[in-house]
Length: 226
Image 1 (cartoon, rainbow, N blue to C red):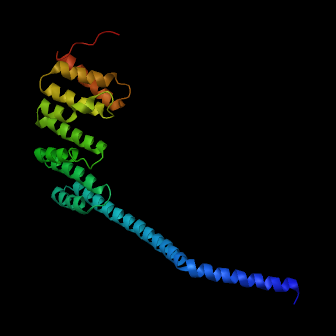
Image 2: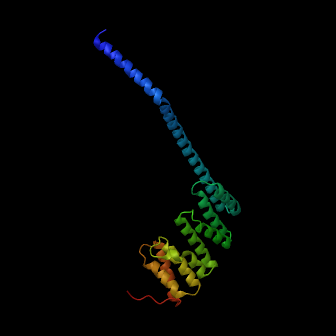
């Protein structure tokens, strides 16, 4: 055996001893790390599967409730929505609460619908945009069934220039003011909508129609020439 061969074998033995020593010292940690990675990957995959399955089941139940409403089976729809509110996944429990309130209004239970929308708007666990939408829904019901003060208590804060829902809030307030015999206040609100270039075209058109009606009845001053 040459000197080179001898030293190569010695080096290989040393490396082997180092590997054995390293494995003896850290092997259990390495195995534990591999097991943790495998278990973590499996757990994540199961969680993804579970969440997708839960969301799919909740979506199917929500669609079934909508179909029941379409078919005029409101009581059955309310029962399904109530189950979804209790057992649904993700955003579906909140959607179920909103749709159930709408079904109550369709059934003519305006007081129940307003109470349901008010309950949603008061729930701090729900996103603010949905809470504000619930206020608007309650307000539009109260245009017909309540007072101006009832409507204002729900949407007056939404009528500010910075609110993304100001057009609908001003529309509800304008209709409530008109119903209450407050023509000047109603005209002011509808004029704000008509002058707001960011308002949807159909909303501005309705505001113009209301302004024309208010002026024709003398409830608002005639428009001045531009």
